[in-house]
Image 1 (cartoon, rainbow, N blue to C red):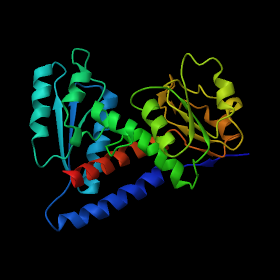
Image 2 (image 1 turned 90 degrees about the vertical axis):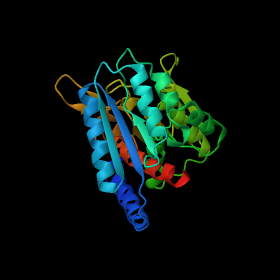
Image 3 (image 1 turned 180 degrees about the vertical axis):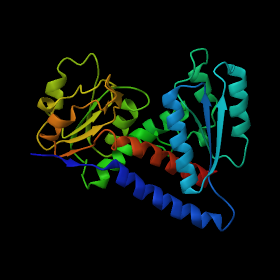
Image 4 (image 1 turned 90 degrees about the horizontal axis):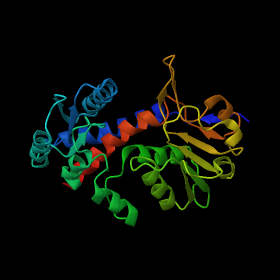
Length: 281
């Protein structure tokens, strides 16, 4: 068996085109969604991500503001900027690029962002709303994972889904989203006693642990859907996921590549969240 590839680039492109079409209609009334992105410091990866987000905003017709702050920006200065954006009627979504420099309190920064403008879905109120099934802005990467699975026509009802990783950013929220789709969900992590046994029973695997090529083909149930959230750069410069692609593709029914799988969906979902925030404010 050779898995069908879930083309995240193409799926994200279609989604972004539909968002642009909706924004074009809004422009007739002189209203457009606005996204503010804050970058503190000069982390190269973060600068690349922010560049991608700025480009996506421009293509979608959004109002975009990018704030590039010095590495030594104080907590007070950062919180003051967020407070200003919370009260700016032209801004409907606020995103602070993580990770922050070590002297800044990440939790306090996230908590400062208005719940209604929390397009990353990291605010405790957003997390709580997701947990109890109330409407909220959902973290972009987990939301993108579910969109990819649905896009290929896979019905999650009654399926066994195994999530490898329990982070607040991906593992936990994607588990809740899978549960909301009526899948039976198991969360595995570093203390799981027999990961391979758990994975071999999984109809759906979501790998989000940040360890290159960790999940191998002999861990995959024949025909499973494999969603690889990881993106890791090897010493030779090659980008790989948390799943060893070649061997897993021989067993899976569907699989996301790295790059070109989940990554493009994260930015597309950021655009969708900003549009949703615009509609709700």
